[in-house]
Amino acid sequence: MFTRRHFLATTATAGLGLLVVPGAAFAQEAGAAPLQTRKIPSTGELLPVIGAGTSGSFEVEAGSQQYQQLKQVLQEFFQHGARVIDTSPNYGGADAILGQLLAEGGWRRETFLATKIAADSPADARAQWAGSLQKLRTDQVDLLQIHNMRDWQEQLPYAHELKAQGKTRYVGITHYVDSGLEEMERLLRKEKLDFIQIHYSVNSPNAARTVLPLARDKGVAVLINRAFDDGRLFSRVKDQALPPWAAEVGIGSWAQLFLKFAISHPAVTAVIPATSRPDRQLDQLKAGTGPLLSAEQQRSLIQQFA
Image (cartoon, rainbow, N blue to C red; front, side):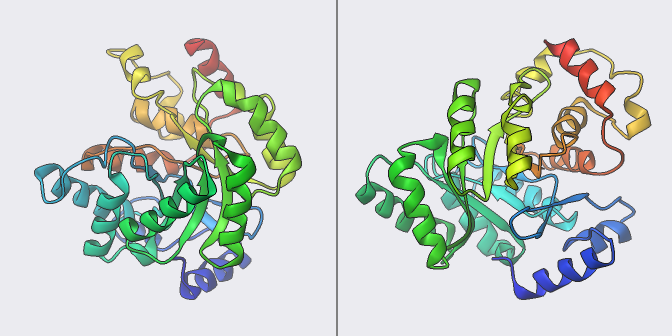
């Protein structure tokens, strides 16, 4: 959970105009640039712009070679100042693996932990929530989201109820394809939300038309999923050179470029790519440092991948 110590540290430095997060000191000592941070509009709490997802990558067997590799992934993640991890009870057991890894590594207090409710009735939601806490080995989460806005009329009030009980600090909704954008816009206009989570990438930029500007106007934080279009973008750029201007903004890989595109939108709080490899984790974290993309650079990428 986000401790009082972390809150005081981040608010004190923010008051001085510095955006520093736990782990940034390690990154500076190691010679790496610290991750940029963005404020959660409803509280001013700072979050690093690069987080992590667990879909696919954390669906492994406890104690396996893949499990040990994930432990290395998380070591790199936290040592370089990252904090945001997003999971779900319907990611094939990823939440239980995450809970075990956080417990073994002693990382729970450093984690901004986000999970979801994906249920179709109040009874199912309550049972699922109890199971999530047990699997994640915690008594509260930082963000509870209604997965794909599923049965949101019933589940969003329940999430607010859990927030009032101190079981979650923030409440939000998620979706992952363009067909959800219209309903997400409606909910942003009528419901009280701390966060939304939506897809946004160089080949799927439609969220920037209405949802992202509206979230910014409403003071709602934004998590970005599918910045790699589930890996399909890498197939499209295989054997292609980066744009000639990439080095000017510190980009050394296509993964960094795709992530930096997402965080260059001013409404975006953090992007949450998933990986099971330590080398890819390090590469992705570099996207959270250095200059952002200009509006012209963003437009050129959208045109390239249209």
